[in-house]
Image (cartoon, rainbow, N blue to C red; front, side, top):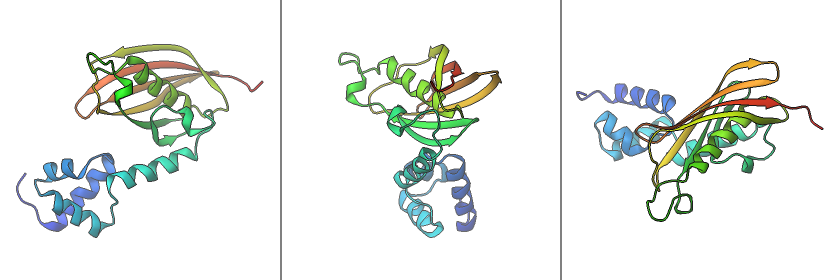
Length: 187
């Protein structure tokens, strides 16, 4: 990328952060071929908060929209974005307690739980349970990796919601699931 003027660079920065809010200053600096300090100065000038603050704001906004999941603690990972009845995003960092000691590879049930609880959260009904799950673990995930799961309701038939969840690390898709979530009337 050839050197661009400050105004153009800042517009590209705004577009990048809007499109991919989880980009770090380092990733933005590489993409724009400038220093991290330049990115920080541009962010400050444009009023773009740092990564942690962007994630915190998105999470707070998403929590207010929960319906089928009563408390945010019931969602595995951090709920970042939620459009009830349509889609949602959650973020989870793989920690030492989530991996096998010998291989340092993440235990699969953590990725499944992240995807399944996100699928439940996007359903815009008071109560939903998993009817069917078809999952595919695509590549091993290691300690320290950040996983971003994106759920989308693909189809609704009666009280059945067909939800696809795709989970990525920084490089590639690592997990995929297709759920049929069933809406239940409260007892």
